[in-house]
Each structure stands twice: as structure tokens, then as C-alpha cells.
View 1: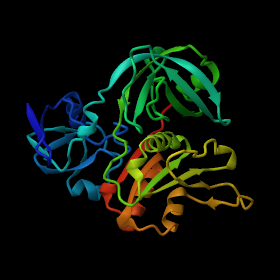
View 2: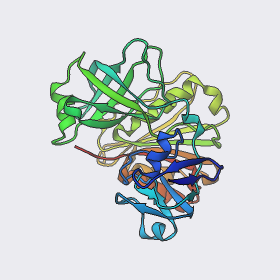
View 3: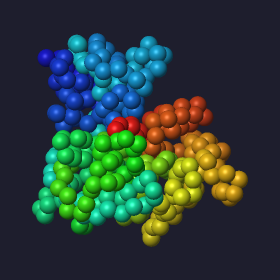
View 4: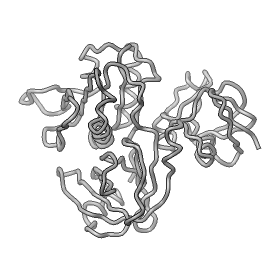
Amino acid sequence: MTSVTLTNGKIFDANGEQTILDAALRQNVFLEYSCRTGRCGICKTKVVKGETDTIKPEESLTELEKADGEILTCCRVAVTDVSLEAEDLGALVDYPAKTVPCRINSLTKLTDDVVEVILRLPPGQPLKFLAGQYVDVIGRGGIRRSYSIANAPRQDGCIVLYIKRVEAGEMSHYWFNEASPNDLLRLEGPLGTFFFRDNAPGTIVLLATGTGIAPVKALLEHLDANPEKVVGRRVVVLWGNRYPKDLFWEPHFENIAVCYTPVLSRAGEEWPGASGYVQRSLLEGELEMDDLIVYACGSEEMIHSARESLCEEGLPAARFYSDAFVSSN
């Protein structure tokens, strides 16, 4: 048995049969993570001391990062006692993941390719979660897919999902062709470490593409219910899509002011608003990087591009939080 030590002194046991991330989660130690497949890069950290070994490809790491001692905790096991340049997220201790039954409460088609699914849980079995986290929905035959929760916790305990059609996707076929109200499913959650951090600087940027607006909407609902968290701060939302018909949501909040910009990449000259890639529109806004915190959710490509370009412009990497949507069928 080996051990892993974090920069804040937290220590947990590890072995060569489970990833460092899995070992941590099973001992209620929460490290940054999202996809758990090696593709999003959110669990990236640096090894200060000790040896690790890969059991899954670290797809989102560059060769330079690997040479510099960076690893993905979802892909590595501890070979010896290890020290990591990471801290545990104590805020998540009170939100343990569990598996519960649920039923479809309603299905609403928002666009040709996006459906809103509202799930209800059994009375007395609410899911306790932080706005921004996600769940795994488990369907027939055990098929499992991850979806961000599109709402902050609400009194009726329901979970709102925005689900995009995936060509030839098995679960996608269910949602768009077979699903009906009262269908019985299971979900596991809450999962992920995408949530609002209270140490926000002057400008809070929420960056999304497609159905990545789901956790952004949840974060905004959380802030609207707790407006004291953003007193004296500016809240900026940029949402990227392809065409005007893809814009199925607009921000309407009672207690916070939101500077909202929809950005379209394929709208054509008739579109009067911002165009191009959403991360480029953010950079063109000439925001002060030393007074900025960014929450980004959407495609892997957008996340990687936004992180790289923003950090090149001076944004501290520690103030870029993300949840990349990793595609699956």
C-alpha cells in the first residue's frame, strides 16, 4: 500500500489497482476532475515526489507537460509514496455520490437537436448537489451517459437536463425516439468539481458552447439565489452556437445583472450580433486578465482553446475552471 500527500497536508492511501483519482474519491478526498477518461485534462496536476504509472492514455497532456512532471490523476496509479501539487476540495465532502432511482417527469423539445428532460426522484430521497455538477443517467441494459444538471437545487427536488442529439447514439436514440414520461431510470451523482468558488475577483466570466449552457444556467441560478456573492462584481456570459435556431435559452434573473452575449459561428452576414468562436469573442472584449475568473463548459475543443489562449494573455491557470463535454455514443 502506498500513500498520496497533497499540498495542504491531506494524505490518503493508494494502490496499483485503482487510479489516484478513484482512490481519493473512495476515501472522500475530492480532487479536481470531470470526464475520468483522460480527455478533458481537468484532473491535471504535478508530481512533486514519487513515481506513478499510466493505466490509461493521458490524451489531453502535451509531451512538454509530461516532461514537466504533469499527470492526469484519472489515468495514473501510485507506484511509490507520492506527493502532488494539488489540494482536496473540502466543499464536496457534504455532497457524496449515490445511485438512486428516478422517473422522467417531462420531455420538452427545445430545438431539432436538443431536448429538455426533467427527472423526479422518489419522495424522501433528494439528490444533494452543488450547482454546476453533473450526473450519470443509467438506462436500459446498464448504458450510462453523463449530463450536466441545468438547475440549481430546487424545492421539488427535480433534476433538469439539456440533452443534445448524437448521431447513431444509443442513448440519444432513446431520448429522442422512445423516452416517455414516467419511464423508470437510475442516476448516479452528484459528480464533478465544476461549482462556484467564493474567492471570485471583480469579473466573473461564464463561457459555454451548445448544451454546455446547462451548468452555466445552474451557476447563475445559484448566484441569483445568493446575490451577495457577486455584490460589486460583473457577471459576463458568452454562449456559442452555430445558428440562431440553436439559442434555446436567455438569462432572466431577479437579483443579479448579467451581461449576456450570444455568439454564432455560422449565422452568416444577416446575424447582427457577435460571430465566430466564443473564446475569441471573449478575448476581443479586452477584459483585464488579473481581475478575471472563468467558468467554461462545452466541447473539448473550446475548453482547450480557451484555456490556452486565455492563459497566454495572462489569466492565471488557477482561475480557469472547466467541464469539458466528452462525446460518446
